[in-house]
Length: 380
Image 1 (cartoon, rainbow, N blue to C red):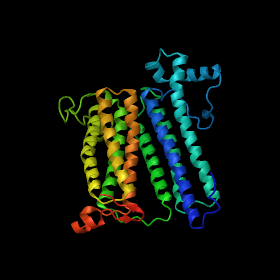
Image 2: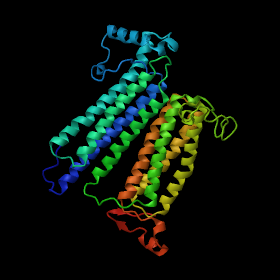
Image 3: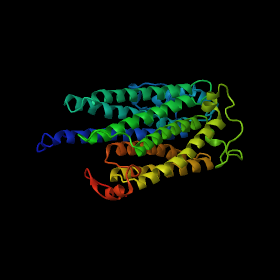
Image 4: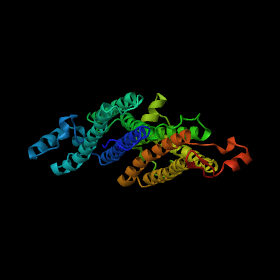
């Protein structure tokens, strides 16, 4: 990573360093996103239980010869997934599922190094703001916890029933969303350098934050759908078993176990959250069109609407077609993009020059429309 050019003034150098740190954090977020995509394909192809040991360091070395493959295959043959579901599998078939899980774990190791090594470099050079000296090690710890949770999830499927725990799957996915969210929000803040302090939340920025929280919960509910294989049931839309609200919800006691483990209930919950967003997101977007906000905020708001339309369409198509791998993978990947869009919109609306239309008298709103503010032009 190149140091700031020598011709930069003392005032410009912190800004240049902030841009470098922001780009590094966004690169880490991109690696986490790619790991999410590969993890989804690993689960959808039934490959997640192919490696039955967790070796964080030595496990980075792949099988190098036929003897290594034979050892790994014999370990897999002792697993419940092989005995119950894949007893017919040959060594060649094992290799196909092994590589998905191996690449997913390798991506985790690579991401950890891409985060840790520049962190040490920036720290040694004294280029980290004081707040980041606490936040970034905390993010690294969260990333390590994500790896541990991934193994605990896999371990839950190495017992009598060769299926991972839906709850652990949801926790694993949830940690990934929190990790990416922290990386993106931190990068956006650092990139601004000595920007003015955030304003008090406006109605529009609070709405973006509520949308982000709702998308996060919906992602967790999607993980529960995947973990319970609930996407293979009720492959109709918008009705479930001929009704908007199917019979037999929450059959397990206590009630919260139904929300976690019952096929009908977890799919209904996921649909309900999707319908709530189908009302909330267009309302948020229309409000953003009416508000005289800066270009950056407007782009984020457009992205929220675009990623929602894609997410809703992919979700319905995945359900109607009984969860084809390609659509299911796109649906999971886009959920992360949708989440990042809502976070970005909330951040931009809070930090950029924004005046909500309802806060102005009509004459003031017309006067404000189109005026430059803080270097960003204000649009309708």
